[in-house]
Image (cartoon, rainbow, N blue to C red; front, side, top):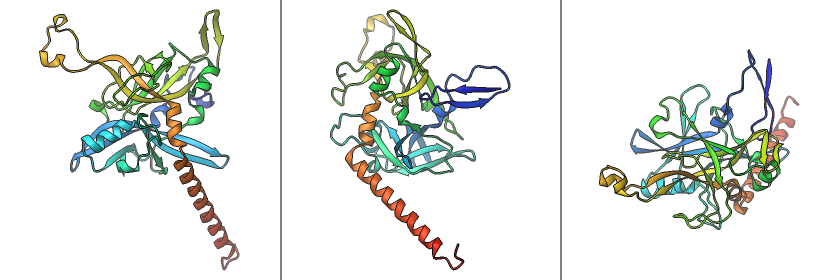
Amino acid sequence: MIQTDSRIGGHSKQYLVNSERALVNVPDEIRKCVAFLTYEEKPGEEVAAATAFFVYSRVNLTGGFTYLVTAAHVIEGLRDVVKAREIFVRLNARDGGVMRVSTEASQWVIHPTDKTVDVAVLPWTWNNDHDGLAYPVVSAATREVMTREGIGLGDEVFLSGLYTRHHGKTRNIPIIRIGNLAAMPEEPVHSARGPLEWYLIEVRSISGLSGSPVFVHADAFQATATGYLPRKPGFYLLGLMHGHWSIKHIAPIMFEIDADYLKQPLNSGIAVVVPIEKILEVINQPSEWDRREEQQKLAMRERWTDEDSATDSPLGE
């Protein structure tokens, strides 16, 4: 029988299945947009550090552009703290195994005016050997979409990213973590980067999940004060994972724990998400528009050259 899944941004996709079964909770397409960022601690010793994900931005009817997105603090940390000479993008290969693409910190693009925005993007040229997908930002959970679809506090959220203790030896294995939308960006949240307008979600973020895509799940009904109203179900890109909110200390009298352990910040179970609008601001900054326009002009010139060559061929073909 044929089942239809329209949860990814409301776009329908049909599956041929052998029996009447529920579709998986999270479509595999979500995990396929995820990549891992790694570095070499020593030559040949690869360390998985953080998560990145692919998005696709359509600019006209003929096509668009792909970007790899992660948290800016990830790139800054690999550059300034780890002193990594290269930042590798670890991808699943279509024929099995993994493939690596080498980048430098200087290639990643950040916000043009606001350095507190924790977003870094890398313009990406797709390789057909890569077994992956890019999420269309047209289906993102902008504030306009959230208002239209009635998405808000309490709605289910989930993320897909790197679990450093089990990232996969022969394939990337992104994990899924699930929670709910805990607070809207009604006023700035204070952080080491400065006061920012972030979403708060009840998800226990851990090391390696920084830069992960965070999705909100709008189910078929919206709870209101007067009852449940129908809405268009789907998975929408809410933003990217900045990290967890730490508790600086706990009272030693409550626990019989080593004193050194008490000095470590504790995960509060609340994580911070950079809104999708900030990602779009980085992708759509003037310098990126100019770069994309120049790239389109070059592609057109190459196409015209190829057509002229075909017309002038000795065989007249």
